[in-house]
Image (cartoon, rainbow, N blue to C red; front, side):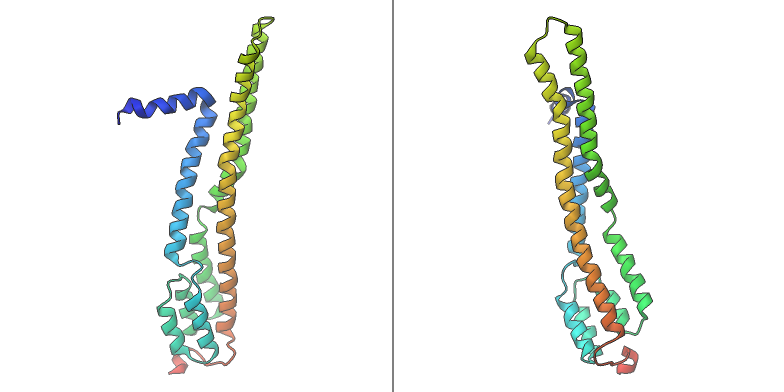
Length: 211
């Protein structure tokens, strides 16, 4: 594909919606890339895959420290390493710090998504205001020779930027809400796990004492 064939659609977008629409499209591309990257990161980290973790917690509550370690070794979750430290006798404060460090890695990029969700509609509205100003300036210059179709065309082009801004903001907001919901569930699990590791139903002691 030639460079002209690539640039032609971009010129059309620029001519139709102006720099604001072009900027919103660029933001949408970056946002989509970030959302896909976060989905891949969540899957690679085993977010939501808690079966082996809960099995290990049950074994720890039953006083089976070595069985709990075996279950953690087979877990795909990023929290398995944190729970292993707890089984080996690490204090609760250390476990909380380790969990928070992993949460921070998974939540990286959330602020950008939040900014896009909040600013994209405002940016679209800004483009609409600019477009309306241009439309009414053209109306003033035309004087008595006003063409209603030309005025209507200028108005719908101006409103296009608001529509694009909303189209970028809404799916971004939904994606961010989904990510935050998953992370909230992870935090609840981590808090439960740390509490159970530091105060098991049937204390078995740390791994060093379980041998």
